[in-house]
Image 1: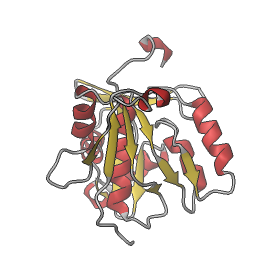
Image 2: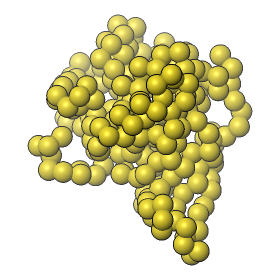
Image 3: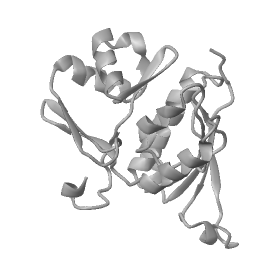
Image 4: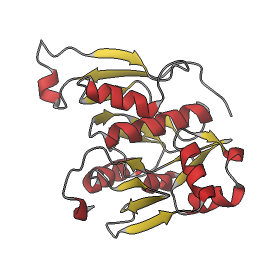
Length: 221
């Protein structure tokens, strides 16, 4: 699988509204998101929110075809999920590659501004935009268990409670992205089968995101 060595770059603003961004005093700032020595996606998203960022733009599409390499896919997907979990507006694009239906496993992420690489790309983007809301697929940690609440499949609530130590360890590893071989094969197959984990080349990552901001009372999600 080819790889890219160009770091992912982010542009941030302190307001989410596009019209407000055009005002002369609304400056933007740019930073590198994929610096190996810098914070991971979870830490970076939290840092951006706490510093006042409310809108973030990625400088290149998330290419699910693998042309930019597995690490680029995983880093971008984790970052978009973390930014979404903080309620930030995310300006990003996605190229769906050979399996365009993968978008249904990703529709809990902030809707992309463009969908590429699919015959019905405009329809996918519109459906993604119309059906998106915060906390569509989330997880919460309790003492000795993790609960996932998933409404990606059209509104009906699916709940998964993980308490087996092997699955809890897998979630901890996958939350930062990890080699697929680091997770027991049966555990990873189960999580991928329920669209709770994704795979890119020899890497895998966790799809649900943590709850940082409740948009509605908890019973609604």
